[in-house]
Image (cartoon, rainbow over all chains, first blue to last red; front, side, top):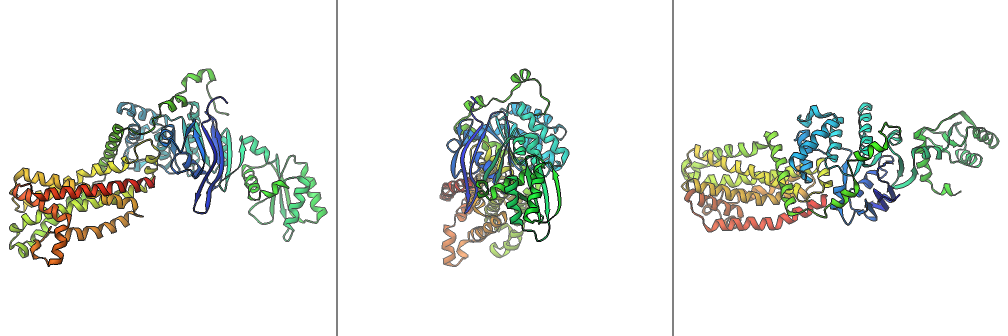
Length: 320
Length: 283
């Protein structure tokens, strides 16, 4: 990598009172990629994004965007970024065209240039018919697209998208994905947060999984999926079965950490190959762990997620 | 990536976004010229908003019309013997009152704005931090202009004949606008520190009522008990009312104009920096 990293963050920390919302995250995003930040609600994704976007002060650590220091040079950083949040942040009382024109002018475009770019963006986002309509008549999807267009009016090289498709219907979601891919084709770098695994899978070249303010995994979608095993053994223990004993057996026999699912008595075991399932079952028989049902399946992305964040919940287990 | 893309050779020159150029072009801070143009753009946004929400003009149009007629006919006989005789005393008082009420909505509106998603975008833009605050304040001048002018128009309709002539009245209007604009900084500051728009409204009423009614706006000072009269004499609103009376009724620029301007400047000097500071904390 000879080019400067689009984002180079080391040890980012943000505390709210006693809560460490972001607890020492390192992040390196290369130019021209879509980088996905994946995590459940409250994991610290948005907080991290807001720190990088100069919207929140950084408590500890440091971050550079295209080599520019975020804390020392916030005004420069703001000229390199387009930020689209979870909620459409456009001016309600203006039309779509007026919104884009205003944001262009505020950032130093001449009036004619701002109007031309607004027109092109509205066409590109399929909003040309609604260009002069009041925003009160816009659907949720149209607002999101307008919001993204507003972030693009000055063609910033880095785009932050905070859960860009949360709350959108599947069709609009697909349109949004196409648009995001188009950005990268134009030379943009995209940092995207999402709680949808399929979204990260579809869009991102690399993914960081965030949980409780920490980065618990990072890699390509495929790497993440294989790291959890190629197949999953789904076990339903009989009532009264010793769960702790079952965990120990799984760890010893399969060399993997079982993932407890929310339903009681159920656990998923990631396996390298489906053959290992037999070993686990024999282990259970020998140790006297009764089971109700057994099945072997390919890991779903939700399991990948549970598995990864499960590891993080008790880091001592990984050492064993 | 499974997306269909043109082959790399074709794509290279189409790259519209170049980070290196963007970094080299990025300026370290906003210039004074940018500050002015950004503030004007924000004012433009506020004016558009006003035009599309005409109910925002209710206070500045209905209040002067209603209060002028109401006060004139209710208190005219009691205070000055007849309505016509009361008008030269009353009209400048109503001007001050309506302009002050208009200020109040500056704070309320600003607080509402701060809670809207668009402020997040303003924060993320490379613009002067003060522009989203200063813009709406500029646009509000239009509202003061309407409030002050309509009061005079209503006065004339019910029989007020300002002795200061057109120039005197214009002077009075300009002075009221300036005072309203300067006092609005108090309410803008309230808007940045209060928790909700409702809170701003409540606190503002508490400030406004004593300020307008414990002044010479509606009654001659010599009718008041001495303790109250002492407060009324130092109340800046009294100075505005006196200055407006001198201008509109006699066409004379008295020391009261000076005191009013001074009070306005002091308010700006104190509350503009305070507002900017606590507004920045929102960022």
